[in-house]
Length: 147
Length: 397
Image 1 (cartoon, helix red, strand yellow):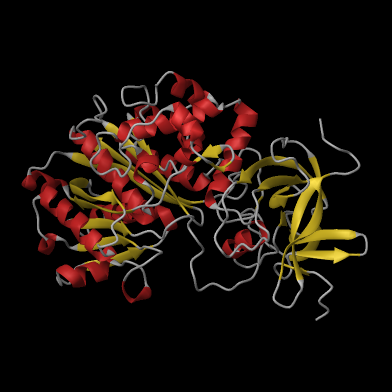
Image 2 (cartoon, helix red, strand yellow; image 1 turned 180 degrees about the horizontal axis):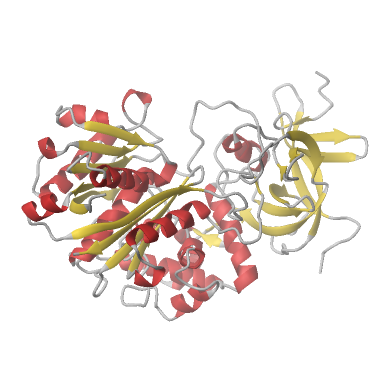
């Protein structure tokens, strides 16, 4: 493995491309519902055929709510060096609300409604020297804060 | 279907008991309930256990068969139910249906738990990939359970203007209710100032606004009307009970998922809301018939939000109710006269059984020091990991 290239913290979670990054989800071809992460089936009980296909989504969204975690989570979560950080819920244009770490916010001044965009950042460097990334949302560069 | 009565209730006090096995806690709680009913182990035709996720014999978690084999090998029917932290409510409901159906004349429901320390971690034995959201939420987001509830709490601030003081008052109320409850772990009253000066765990929630985890056990003996009259116990009937799972479109930030598909008009925390509605329907009652509620207050946010989500109050009304002490024991809608999860600490699968014990103590007029005046109808509501909900309605007489 080329140790200079970062890897996602979980396979099939998000995908880098030449012009950015997208979350990997599922889209129901029958009822139109989007899911993240990708799943086995559509969950809408009114949907009969439930044909889901992989889809890329989530480049932009709007902050629905948030919290700042002051205590370090159990060991399964690796983030080095650890420090308090924000987690948010992001409403995506695809009518799905996604939970994500937040980046680039002033932890004392996070505003619900902020326009955000998808990025990835390194959580830690693994034993092979590879940087392990997760997806995060940060305030949208072009539009700034929403009304 | 036959009417179902509560014959006996019992609990092992909540706390940390490193020198007692989970099985020991279970046996002590069930023995207390048997003594309360005036019956013996040999009288039980069945035992329903809320299966622990954390420990128990043969690596299965605590099971009813394990308890029977340890104390009384009577050949009684053993049923083991999952459902995360709702398992206790599901166990009581299952036991009630086994009496109502005519399968058993006397049966017990049991929950007992010894909790690991700190944030509840992911259980072992599941693949490390995106098919398990309880893996993903840790590795990709690091979202603890309080973080989920905190995001709900911040949204409520945004929508209803709930203040830090109001959240703190909800915690103060729960702790005040527990002062005279011998089964509660935290029995010291606290002030708004103390709550707000406790460390922020996950903003806006402070340490004293988030429930701890505890060891504890509770048991309920259910039976027929004939059994209740024969034993001469104070008459408390299971007016209705129900279990439910979550609905598509539910806007709740559901542990351990990392996304949701909110749809307008879908009930929040629908697994519990659905159970509450069905339990009330089974009882032939409406929300206004309920005199008090024992509900899962994992945080101060739950104390405010749940009575609104389940139709007992209007959206945003809880803040006014807290400010005017109307959710207190002497108020219009007493919430958790026991002191709730905030005063007990959550012994997960035992909690839903303990709620039903408290309903019975209140309806019998035995809740010394925390008695709701003229309590005739009480309702329990509990949520379990994986979109499980349960609700039990008890009625005096």
